[in-house]
Image (tube, rainbow, N blue to C red):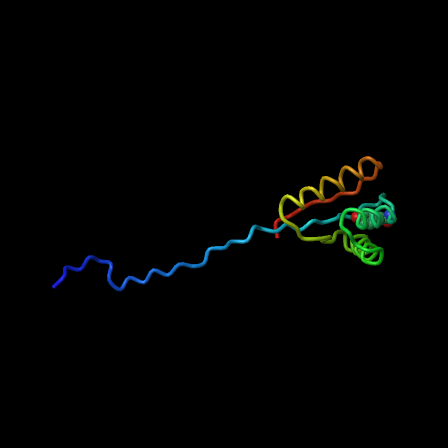
Length: 102
Ligand code: TYC
């Protein structure tokens, strides 16, 4: 008889290991000073929303304190946050935009 080499009947199951990269929520925060029209403009300009969608999200932030504007890869989320923060600062509005791992 052949000596058992320990390799018989060993089931080697491998999970198809296709981990998707993590996604990040980009959020807009409410404040008392940034004009509503400015926020709507930001949402149209940097997030490709139409006017109705932008207005709706702006109102949600205004009423609830914050809202998720979109979900992106790390790099895209980071770019959006930087673009919004730079644009708000240039216009001297205190608008805050942040990202959070989903
Ligand atoms: N609360 C602001 C106002 O009354 C409007 C506003 C909405 C500000 C959304 C920030 O992310 C924001 N003018």
